[in-house]
Image (cartoon, rainbow, N blue to C red; front, side, top):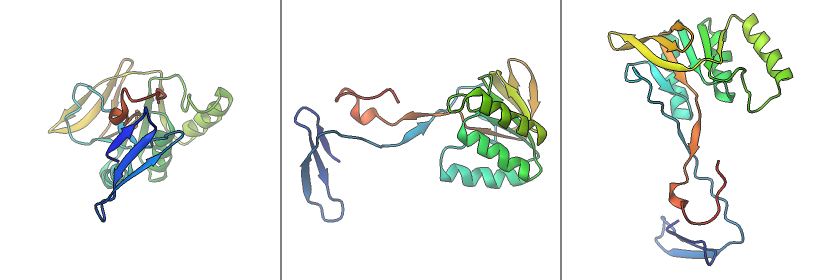
Length: 181
C-alpha cells in the first residue's frame, strides 16, 4: 500500500511483481499490520539470556536457550507465558512464573477458571510469583542470574519476557478512527 485516502475511502497500492499501480475503494478499512513487542526498561536488561517471546523467531531462540537452562523465569501470565511455563515443566526445568497481576490469564478468564489452572501449575511445581513487579535483573559474567521483584529475588539462568505488545499503527495515526488496541 502506498497511499490511504481516508476522506475519499480509497487505497493506492503498487504490485511489487510487475510494478503497476492499483487503486481501489472501500467501505470499511481493517488494517492488520501486526504488533511490536513491549520492551521493558528494566535495569540489567542488557545481560545475556533475557529474551522476548512474541513470534516464531523468538520461539526458536527460546527452544535453543531452554535446552541449556535449569532455572527459567517467565514474566507475563498471558497466553504465551502460560504455554511456555507448561512446556518448560515438561522438560524438567525449575520454573518461576512472574506477573504483576494477582492471577494468571486475568484478562481472558474468570477467577473460577484461573484458580483451577493455578492449582494445576502449583501441583506441577511451578513457583507462582503473582502480584509482583519486576524491578531489575542481575547477572554474573554477562549472563542473567537473578530476577528482582518488589517482593523477592528469584534465581534464573534464562528469563523469557511475554509482557505484551503494542499495535503497529504508526502508519495510520491521524487518518481516521482507530481502536486503542
